[in-house]
Image 1 (cartoon, rainbow over the protein chains, first blue to last red):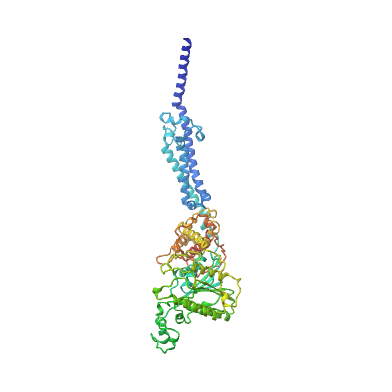
Image 2: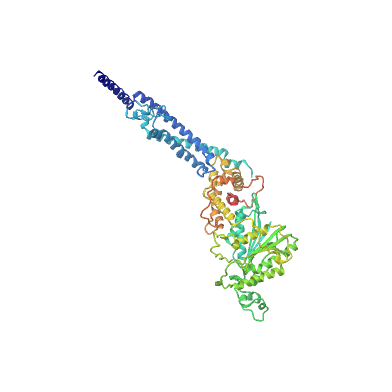
Length: 185
Length: 437
């Protein structure tokens, strides 16, 4: 009889422990959410800056890579916008917005953020917001995907614009007209 | 420079194809071409003639940047009003005892000359007295001179022998060393009985011209006969077919294509010796330098290149390109810069020619497509539905000419910035066609 009591007791304790563990996974603590949100928000910030820089650099160099092979790449103005809006933006959007929704957090690029971060958007944890609190304070960064998409698009557009300005400056300094003016007929 | 004298409709056709082959880069060597006919000169030949004149860098020379150009001269023998009887006897129907009756039968004598010669070679002596100057028929110095025409038609049947004979006399008189040769077209098409031209007359013409050649043309060095009594017959091109986009011969054995290859062989062969017997001077077989398949391939590449130059607006891209040389190579930007400098001088300063590449791009389109009824360069060639895809890098591989900035340019040709843009467009089209791959 005593053996039955002891087994029942152990079962109850084990079940309680498992329930506690499961309950603990479903509902992360607020401090954890805050940390993960901060990490994701920082990643968004770096991605926005990175997208702008990449759009500028790729806009200026994509001609070198593909200019001899594709007509769009041989057109300086067209290729800058192709690089910024059709290459860099979709790539950034995929990495920052789509990746966590498809593959989840907790691995590769998002290894510093726990897989349970997605559950934080239903919780109130004083989220710091995006871009150092300028946008969406109090709302989890993960839930602000529309704003993040717009930020990435804007960053790519700014990068493209910068590439365009630099390209025009290079043309003035090294372009066809400069070559023509450099010689004597 | 070798010389081609193309006589009559068949001569024109062969000359036209040969000019096309030159523009496509199949024929590399420049040549002098004289086209003589009582009929209208083909629009395609006239278009190529004006195109070549646009390419010149100096009015006194037939050169463009990097190449010597063919020289094309056309001469339409103006047919007088009336008929042969009227011209020679003063009466529309010459009296039976008039000497002119000894040379012309009634039908020939009464043929209205302005309507054509209708395969009557005897009439060419009436319509063309003294119309052909010595300069036109002067043989090529230290090179080949090749006459091309049909020996069954009216114009060339009547003019071929006298012209070859006169070229021989001019060579002797001016001590010119030139080998005079001929591509002679016998019967190669079915006669148009509806126009009153019967097959028996064509056969008679053939016999007349060849006999006269054998008896009188000592200076004829070599000749090739296309067609003849046993040769294949093809459908003759209609006037409409000779218009824009004239089709090419459809087989290697087509008489017209055979004539084109024979012309090329006779212009360039320096090996075959002179033979005493007239019959031995006939070239019955030869190694052609090109075939129809290769020529069609070149046509396809050249058209693709020229169309890409027009449709992709290459110059518009280049003017805003920071990576000019990695994408477009060195020579093309240098070439455009060279003409831009000329435009700046012709147009009165850099501030007035800021849009020069765009203007030249516009001129490329105008030249290629034409304006209204005016032919474009694209109209010269057969229209191909499918052409090769061209990548931008293809333009870096075109053999653009090296630019010598110190070389003089003729202010009489480059009179304004617009004219310079037109000539630049012509040069870009010329090299794209000839060396584009």
